[in-house]
Length: 228
Image 1: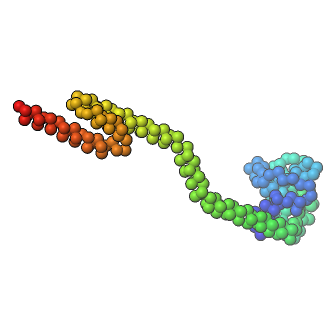
Image 2 (image 1 turned 180 degrees about the vertical axis):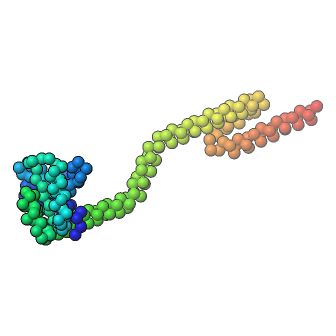
Image 3 (image 1 turned 90 degrees about the horizontal axis):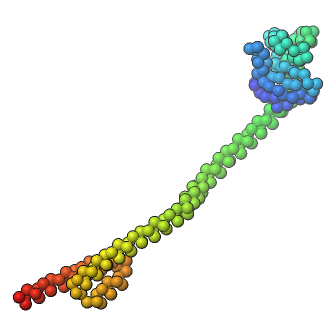
């Protein structure tokens, strides 16, 4: 078991140390030194806890230094771990420091539950990612469909404008041809026939009509020359 795991277990369940504790902070700064954990007990006093998997004699110097730097006569100072070197508990008690030998089984059980919860959360996250990927094509198609639907009014408006422009252009060409026909004395039925041309037939029939007009013009020019 790692020290970081032990700290995490105590943060999640301060009752492993003592009933009624409320977690207050970690890596608490004390004039440049950092105490692992800080709790508030049920009487409102601060409890500074230095955590070790196996508590050695050197930990005594740390907790004594924290007590000096905190300068709080009401605060409590404790060493917590899964085991202590021989004689250290007595030294701590004689110098008014506290210790807590943690229940290894309880800590291990808590860590296993936390791992299971973390695994479940990871599986949920992966499942959510897979669902998100599966839904992405559907979402894209929906966005495209919405964009197409939104652009329909513009497309219809543009199409109507093109149709109107085409009609206006056709009307101008028809008017020009009608004027030419009237100047050349073409029959009235030719003019009526031209007016009934549809827009789709216009180009092809326009070509034929122009060829016909040109033929009539040449025929008239030929007739005039023979008379002379």
